[in-house]
Length: 161
Image 1 (cartoon, rainbow, N blue to C red):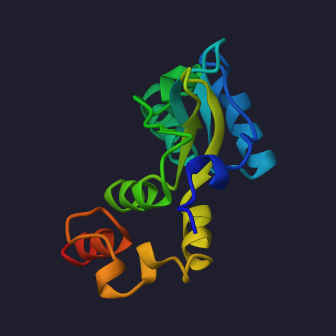
Image 2: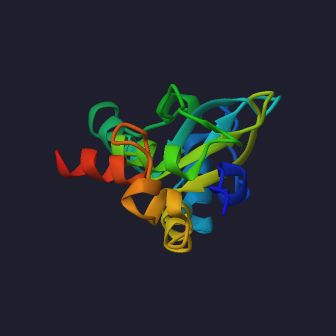
C-alpha cells in the first residue's frame, strides 16, 4: 500500500484573498462560509500569506489603540506562508503538523501555485485508514529506522515534549 501524498489528501481551496482586499470584507466572508482561514495569493495564485481567524482577532487590538480599525488583508495576514508540495507524504505531513501550530497548510504545484489545502484532520483520517500498511504499523522489522521519519518517529518526538 503506497503512502498517501498531499495531492490525495488535500481539499479544494474554499476561498482565497487578494492582499489588497478590505479586512472587514474578509472577516465577513470567513464568518459567512465558516472558514478557519484562507490563503492570500497573487495573480499567479502564488501564496503571499494566510489570513486566519486568529489573524482577524488582531483587528480588536487595532481598534483598542487606533479607534475604528481599517486596513487591507495584507495588514493582518500571517507571513511568510508555509506550504507543502503535492508529493509531500503523509509521514512528512505528520511531522510538520506536530512541529508547528498550523491546523492546515496550502498545497502548491510545481510552479508554486496554490492548488489545495491539507488539514490535520485529513492527515489523521489517512493514518486511521492505513492500519495495514507495514511502513506505518507493521512488525518491528518492517518499520522505518528510529531516525527514519515515520509516524513512530514523529510520535516519539511528540512524547518528548
